[in-house]
Amino acid sequence: MEQQIYKGKLIQFHPLKIAKKEQLTKNTFSLEFDIPGNLQENFKFEAGQFVSIKFSAHGQDVINDYSMTSAPYEKKICLGIKVNSSEGATAELFRNYNVGDELMVGEPSGRFTLVSKPSEFRTIVAFAAGIGITPVLSHFKNILHTEPRTRLFLFFGNKSSDELIYREQLDTLAKRYGDRLQIFYFFSKEKTADQFFYGRLDEKKLNLIINQILHLDDTDEESTIWDAVDEVLICGKGEMIKSLANACYHHGIPKKNIHFELFEEYNDDIYPIEKEFPLIENVEVGFKIFGKEYETFLPDNKERILQQLLIQKFPVPYSCKSGICGSCECYLEEGEVELLENEYLTEKEEAQGKILACMSIIKSKKIKLNFDLS
Image 1 (tube, helix red, strand yellow):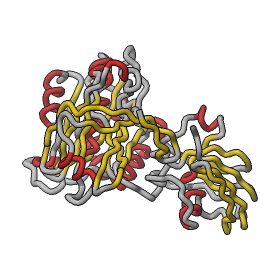
Image 2: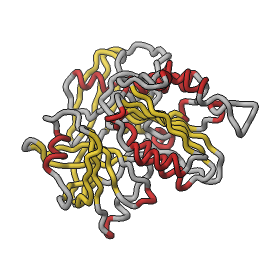
Image 3: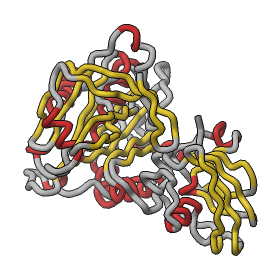
Image 4: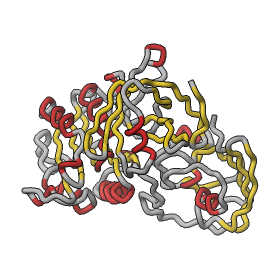
């Protein structure tokens, strides 16, 4: 076992052997790992989570996060991975590691999860684009296995049919659970027989989906399927998430029921910020990270904490700057901040004094933070 500080948190890594490797499309592949008996407890996970993989690329150690496509009941770790560039680290992972090789795999993590409700009648809608299907596939397999009363709708966007990954698995699920699962494929760069399925998944497409697919509800003649939606899952690039999350919210889905997972660095807010704050100038900031103490002054509180610390080139961990990934999670030990809407922290964690630096506005002349959570 190896331990390493990663994104401000202590992640436990274990050597696991690759049991299966498969190329899915020209730029995606899957990895499956053997989990020895003594590590079964360490690798228990919830649907929608990811693992961190540590490997060597271009002579350096790299740590990347990859979402699992396997469901918890399958008791194995299966990852869907996209190679964005032939020169990138993930391309090295594909080229240099094969069945039988060991990789350092971090214990499962992530908040893109749902509370299981096997005794309830639920309607869950998911939107995914490209490799964003990976955690959604994990969710859908798990829900179909554990929630006999839940019905699912998947809207899956890709550039073309050649780039559509896991189609065989998805179609098999749709055939097996046809009474509870419907899947719709959309293509942005390939003409479709029905114009409805051509184009990107965005606010305009959601309006059409609500009006033409999620309209008549066989279980309740007085309402629509959209009216019955309990949870929404969105996974893909930032602009897609922003467009769909806001559209779902404006169509009546509470923000707490809209869950999203980001598959790239994204620096914009998902939801618009409508609140104004009193101006505070020359703010004293002290913080601890990776065991070191830092002190600085910020000119004012017009920008959020993370953004200002990054401008001053402090080594603060981040990935999304949008309150999704949790990389900049820290304790507020002194002072006052306003924590804006985020997809990561629970109410219990907020009550314990945790904040996300990327979503926090300073409200006092002095604050003290601790990024060392472990």
